Amino acid sequence: MPLTAHQLGQFDLYANQLLQENRRTNLTSTRDREGVYRRHFAESIAILRALEERGVELSPMIDVGTGAGFPGLPVKIARPQVVLTLLEATGKKARFLESMVAELRLSDVQVVQGRAEDIGREPAHRDAYRLVLARAVAPLPVLLELTLPFLATGGVLAAPKGSALQREVGAAANALVALRGEIEAVVPLDLRGEGPRQSLVIVRKTEVTPNNYPRRAGMPAKRPL
Image (cartoon, rainbow, N blue to C red; front, side, top):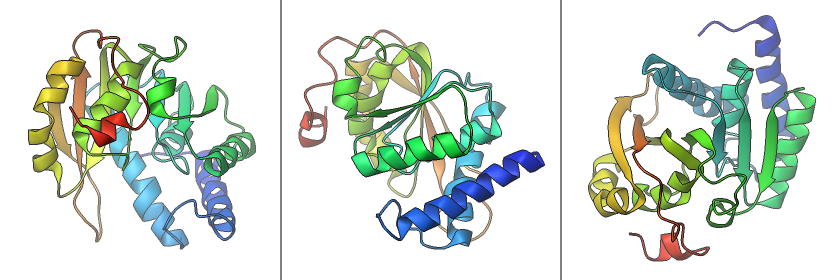
Protein backbone atom coordinates (compact mmCIF):
# COMPACT_ATOMS: atom_id res chain seq x y z
CA MET A 1 0.00 0.00 0.00
CA PRO A 2 1.59 3.30 -1.08
CA LEU A 3 2.34 5.63 1.82
CA THR A 4 3.92 9.07 1.83
CA ALA A 5 7.08 9.98 3.72
CA HIS A 6 4.87 11.87 6.19
CA GLN A 7 2.73 8.79 6.83
CA LEU A 8 5.79 6.58 7.27
CA GLY A 9 7.11 9.11 9.76
CA GLN A 10 3.84 8.94 11.67
CA PHE A 11 4.11 5.15 11.90
CA ASP A 12 7.69 5.53 13.12
CA LEU A 13 6.64 8.01 15.82
CA TYR A 14 3.74 5.76 16.84
CA ALA A 15 6.04 2.73 17.23
CA ASN A 16 8.60 4.69 19.23
CA GLN A 17 6.03 6.13 21.62
CA LEU A 18 4.27 2.80 22.05
CA LEU A 19 7.46 0.97 22.96
CA GLN A 20 8.55 3.75 25.30
CA GLU A 21 5.20 3.87 27.12
CA ASN A 22 5.06 0.08 27.23
CA ARG A 23 8.03 0.12 29.61
CA ARG A 24 5.87 1.93 32.16
CA THR A 25 2.41 0.55 31.49
CA ASN A 26 1.26 -2.69 29.91
CA LEU A 27 -0.28 -1.43 26.68
CA THR A 28 0.56 -4.47 24.57
CA SER A 29 2.41 -7.76 24.93
CA THR A 30 4.55 -6.85 21.90
CA ARG A 31 7.89 -5.56 23.19
CA ASP A 32 10.03 -5.01 20.08
CA ARG A 33 9.87 -2.73 17.08
CA GLU A 34 9.70 -5.52 14.51
CA GLY A 35 6.80 -7.07 16.37
CA VAL A 36 4.91 -3.78 16.47
CA TYR A 37 5.24 -3.37 12.71
CA ARG A 38 4.43 -7.00 11.90
CA ARG A 39 1.80 -7.80 14.51
CA HIS A 40 0.02 -4.45 14.77
CA PHE A 41 0.73 -2.17 11.82
CA ALA A 42 0.80 -4.81 9.07
CA GLU A 43 -2.35 -6.54 10.30
CA SER A 44 -4.19 -3.23 10.55
CA ILE A 45 -3.21 -2.30 6.99
CA ALA A 46 -4.21 -5.79 5.78
CA ILE A 47 -7.66 -5.20 7.30
CA LEU A 48 -7.88 -1.85 5.50
CA ARG A 49 -6.85 -3.41 2.20
CA ALA A 50 -9.45 -6.18 2.53
CA LEU A 51 -12.22 -3.67 3.26
CA GLU A 52 -11.27 -1.37 0.39
CA GLU A 53 -11.11 -4.28 -2.04
CA ARG A 54 -14.72 -5.08 -1.12
CA GLY A 55 -15.82 -1.46 -1.43
CA VAL A 56 -16.76 -1.12 2.25
CA GLU A 57 -17.55 2.42 3.38
CA LEU A 58 -14.92 3.40 5.95
CA SER A 59 -16.30 6.53 7.56
CA PRO A 60 -17.50 7.30 10.14
CA MET A 61 -15.67 4.46 11.89
CA ILE A 62 -15.46 3.28 15.51
CA ASP A 63 -12.77 0.96 16.84
CA VAL A 64 -14.31 -0.89 19.80
CA GLY A 65 -11.89 -2.09 22.49
CA THR A 66 -9.04 -0.47 20.60
CA GLY A 67 -6.41 -0.98 23.34
CA ALA A 68 -3.27 0.83 22.19
CA GLY A 69 -5.04 1.92 19.01
CA PHE A 70 -5.25 -1.13 16.77
CA PRO A 71 -6.46 -1.32 14.11
CA GLY A 72 -8.06 2.14 14.18
CA LEU A 73 -5.03 4.44 14.40
CA PRO A 74 -2.99 2.74 11.63
CA VAL A 75 -6.07 2.90 9.39
CA LYS A 76 -6.42 6.61 10.20
CA ILE A 77 -2.76 7.26 9.39
CA ALA A 78 -3.14 5.49 6.04
CA ARG A 79 -6.50 7.15 5.28
CA PRO A 80 -6.46 10.61 6.93
CA GLN A 81 -9.92 11.52 5.62
CA VAL A 82 -11.64 8.91 7.82
CA VAL A 83 -13.66 10.19 10.79
CA LEU A 84 -12.64 7.90 13.67
CA THR A 85 -13.78 7.16 17.21
CA LEU A 86 -11.51 5.10 19.47
CA LEU A 87 -13.42 3.34 22.26
CA GLU A 88 -11.41 1.99 25.19
CA ALA A 89 -12.53 1.10 28.71
CA THR A 90 -9.10 1.24 30.43
CA GLY A 91 -8.06 4.70 31.59
CA LYS A 92 -4.30 4.40 31.02
CA LYS A 93 -4.86 3.19 27.48
CA ALA A 94 -7.36 5.96 26.75
CA ARG A 95 -4.85 8.55 27.98
CA PHE A 96 -2.14 7.05 25.77
CA LEU A 97 -4.49 7.25 22.78
CA GLU A 98 -5.23 10.91 23.49
CA SER A 99 -1.52 11.69 23.61
CA MET A 100 -0.87 9.78 20.37
CA VAL A 101 -3.66 11.55 18.51
CA ALA A 102 -2.15 14.87 19.59
CA GLU A 103 1.44 13.92 18.74
CA LEU A 104 0.46 12.51 15.36
CA ARG A 105 -1.56 15.70 14.71
CA LEU A 106 -4.60 13.75 13.57
CA SER A 107 -7.90 15.52 12.97
CA ASP A 108 -11.43 14.07 13.19
CA VAL A 109 -10.47 11.58 15.90
CA GLN A 110 -12.16 11.32 19.28
CA VAL A 111 -11.17 9.05 22.15
CA VAL A 112 -14.04 7.76 24.29
CA GLN A 113 -13.39 5.99 27.57
CA GLY A 114 -16.11 3.53 28.55
CA ARG A 115 -17.57 0.09 28.07
CA ALA A 116 -19.24 -0.81 24.80
CA GLU A 117 -22.41 -1.89 26.64
CA ASP A 118 -22.80 1.64 28.03
CA ILE A 119 -21.54 3.77 25.14
CA GLY A 120 -23.59 1.74 22.65
CA ARG A 121 -26.77 3.06 24.29
CA GLU A 122 -25.80 6.72 24.05
CA PRO A 123 -27.67 8.62 21.28
CA ALA A 124 -24.43 10.13 19.96
CA HIS A 125 -23.04 6.68 19.20
CA ARG A 126 -25.98 4.33 18.64
CA ASP A 127 -26.77 3.67 14.95
CA ALA A 128 -24.10 6.27 14.16
CA TYR A 129 -21.31 4.46 12.27
CA ARG A 130 -20.80 2.88 8.87
CA LEU A 131 -17.93 0.69 10.06
CA VAL A 132 -17.02 -0.95 13.35
CA LEU A 133 -13.55 -2.44 13.82
CA ALA A 134 -12.93 -4.87 16.68
CA ARG A 135 -9.71 -6.82 17.10
CA ALA A 136 -9.13 -9.42 19.84
CA VAL A 137 -12.09 -8.18 21.89
CA ALA A 138 -14.40 -11.18 22.40
CA PRO A 139 -15.74 -14.35 20.74
CA LEU A 140 -18.05 -13.53 17.84
CA PRO A 141 -21.41 -14.16 19.62
CA VAL A 142 -20.39 -11.70 22.37
CA LEU A 143 -18.75 -9.29 19.95
CA LEU A 144 -21.91 -8.95 17.89
CA GLU A 145 -23.87 -7.69 20.90
CA LEU A 146 -21.09 -5.24 21.80
CA THR A 147 -20.74 -3.80 18.31
CA LEU A 148 -23.89 -4.00 16.15
CA PRO A 149 -25.76 -1.33 18.18
CA PHE A 150 -23.14 1.19 17.01
CA LEU A 151 -23.86 0.56 13.33
CA ALA A 152 -26.35 2.29 11.09
CA THR A 153 -28.47 -0.12 9.09
CA GLY A 154 -26.36 -1.33 6.18
CA GLY A 155 -23.12 -0.72 8.05
CA VAL A 156 -20.39 -3.30 8.56
CA LEU A 157 -18.57 -4.95 11.45
CA ALA A 158 -15.06 -6.10 10.51
CA ALA A 159 -13.42 -8.47 13.00
CA PRO A 160 -10.18 -10.41 12.42
CA LYS A 161 -10.28 -13.97 13.71
CA GLY A 162 -7.77 -16.82 13.94
CA SER A 163 -8.00 -20.56 14.46
CA ALA A 164 -11.33 -20.41 16.35
CA LEU A 165 -13.07 -18.80 13.36
CA GLN A 166 -15.32 -21.68 12.31
CA ARG A 167 -16.37 -22.47 15.86
CA GLU A 168 -17.22 -18.84 16.57
CA VAL A 169 -19.19 -18.42 13.34
CA GLY A 170 -21.21 -21.53 14.15
CA ALA A 171 -21.95 -20.28 17.65
CA ALA A 172 -23.06 -16.85 16.42
CA ALA A 173 -26.27 -17.93 14.63
CA ASN A 174 -28.65 -16.91 17.42
CA ALA A 175 -26.87 -13.59 18.02
CA LEU A 176 -27.06 -12.70 14.32
CA VAL A 177 -30.83 -13.21 14.30
CA ALA A 178 -31.42 -11.34 17.56
CA LEU A 179 -29.20 -8.37 16.69
CA ARG A 180 -30.18 -8.12 13.01
CA GLY A 181 -26.95 -8.99 11.25
CA GLU A 182 -25.69 -11.42 8.65
CA ILE A 183 -22.22 -12.67 7.80
CA GLU A 184 -21.45 -11.27 4.39
CA ALA A 185 -17.96 -12.66 3.87
CA VAL A 186 -14.93 -14.26 5.48
CA VAL A 187 -11.79 -12.91 3.82
CA PRO A 188 -8.25 -14.28 4.36
CA LEU A 189 -5.93 -11.45 5.37
CA ASP A 190 -2.85 -10.86 3.25
CA LEU A 191 -0.17 -11.23 5.92
CA ARG A 192 3.33 -12.25 4.96
CA GLY A 193 5.86 -13.93 7.21
CA GLU A 194 5.46 -16.18 10.19
CA GLY A 195 2.53 -16.18 12.58
CA PRO A 196 -1.01 -17.54 12.77
CA ARG A 197 -3.23 -17.16 9.75
CA GLN A 198 -5.94 -14.55 10.17
CA SER A 199 -9.25 -14.03 8.39
CA LEU A 200 -11.56 -11.04 8.45
CA VAL A 201 -15.19 -11.70 9.33
CA ILE A 202 -17.44 -9.10 7.69
CA VAL A 203 -20.93 -8.76 9.19
CA ARG A 204 -23.57 -6.54 7.59
CA LYS A 205 -26.27 -4.97 9.78
CA THR A 206 -29.59 -5.65 8.03
CA GLU A 207 -32.09 -3.90 10.35
CA VAL A 208 -32.15 -1.71 13.43
CA THR A 209 -30.93 -3.62 16.50
CA PRO A 210 -33.71 -3.96 19.12
CA ASN A 211 -33.50 -1.48 21.98
CA ASN A 212 -32.98 -4.19 24.61
CA TYR A 213 -29.45 -4.75 23.27
CA PRO A 214 -26.77 -4.45 24.40
CA ARG A 215 -27.62 -5.79 27.82
CA ARG A 216 -26.06 -4.28 30.92
CA ALA A 217 -22.27 -4.34 31.32
CA GLY A 218 -20.88 -7.84 31.71
CA MET A 219 -24.00 -9.71 30.61
CA PRO A 220 -23.04 -10.30 26.95
CA ALA A 221 -19.89 -12.18 28.04
CA LYS A 222 -21.58 -13.92 30.96
CA ARG A 223 -24.61 -15.11 28.99
CA PRO A 224 -23.88 -15.01 25.24
CA LEU A 225 -26.93 -14.98 22.99
